[in-house]
Amino acid sequence: MLVFTGFNVLCVLVYRRLAGVRWPDALFWITHPHSLEYRHIHDSTKFFGVFVYFCVFAFQIWSAERVLVTIFRRQGMEAWKTMINDVGIEKVENHFIVCGYGQVGRTVVDQLKRLEIPFVLIETNDGLYRELLKDNVMVIQGDAKRHDCRDSSRTGHLYRDRQRR
Image (tube, rainbow, N blue to C red; front, side, top):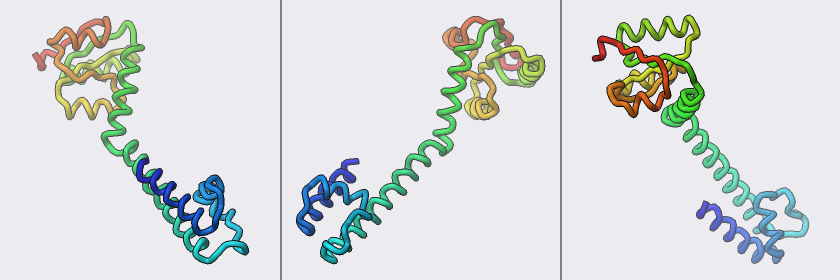
């Protein structure tokens, strides 16, 4: 933003010098080069207007690309899924807490999904946690042995996967 602001100030100064206009008009010309009166300005002002237009256009493409990359790259999507997951966990009531997504835990989760019974899964494996998050499973990353992890899923009926003990 600082570079773009500096660019705008420089453009205003150059437009004022080339065309002898007031600063509000020069500032307006930066984003509206079509408003330059081509019959009454010098060729140097026209060429500078084209240069400014391409610079503004390039900045818009670059900034839009940066924003889109930030939002839609893998980490951005994971952060969004984590936020949605956290909101969902806050809203769930009268649910089961499934500790671990081992062989038995997976079976329990499948049955709870099939019966549409609310549950929260607690999983320690980071890779598995990310995969479950992508599949829209309400999951908390952490160790089910720790009370603060279970407390973050509020009160619920606890089911512990025996293979994870």
